[in-house]
Every structure is written in C-alpha cells, then in structure tokens.
Amino acid sequence: MSFVMALIAGSVFGAGLLLSGMADPAKVLNFLDVAGHWDPSLAFVMAGAIAVTLPGYRWLRGRDAPWFSATFQWPNRHDIDRRLVGGALLFGVGWGLGGLCPGPAIVSLPLLAPGALVFFVCMVAGIALARRFT
Image (cartoon, rainbow, N blue to C red; front, top):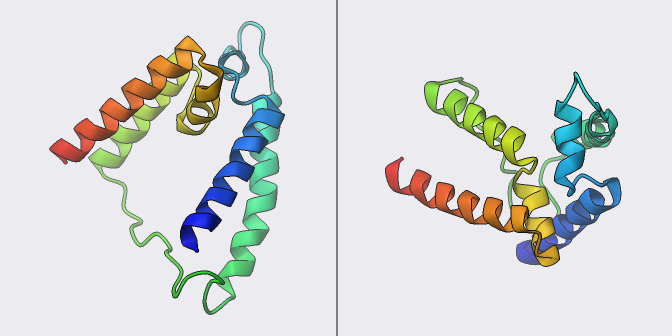
C-alpha cells in the first residue's frame, strides 16, 4: 500500500510541477537572474507550497499514527555539519547551473529534453558516488 501512496503522491507532485511550469529550466534560470529578466513565479510557487504544507504538518503532528503506516517517519537529526552544508552547496550549484533539481528533471524525462537527460544521468551518477563514498 505504501508504494501505491508514494506513486499517487509523486504523480500529484509531478503534475503540480508541470502545471506551474517549474519543469522548464528557463523558469528557474529566470528566477535566479535578478539583474536581468527576473521571473518571480518560482517564489509564488514556493510560497503556495509552504502555505499548503505547513498546516498539513501541524495537523499531522497532532495525530497518533499515519493512515497507511505503523508509525510516522519524522526527521530525527537537527545538527548542521560539513556534509549537510557541502551537499546543500552542491545541490544549489547544480540547480543554478542546470536550471533543474531532481523533481523537475524526472518529470522532464518523457519529454526527452537533452538538458534533462544529461542532468538525470549526472544526478544518478552523483547519487551512486555518494552512496559509495559515504
């Protein structure tokens, strides 16, 4: 059942990325271009996501157990270390250079966009390297 729920959640997330235009690298790059053709739409999408997610988390925190699992899987680490900062920097640089992050890259795969294909291959290679050396 958890696989089905993950598939549904991922499909809704992917549809949201497509509908909002966030699967288009040009949207992301234009958001980062504050001195040129700045496009604030990514900020509105992020604000909308936070506005929906925050009340949902507050509601879930008051529940004893989730509907489709025995327990909640809340993050249990709160420390900031070199690995976290390094990973965040690497993620941000990749996002800024490519205009994609993992979600939009996966959503863009069926479009066979060359940039998305290259990004996806590099992302999978990076995940494999991280698993091997950490």
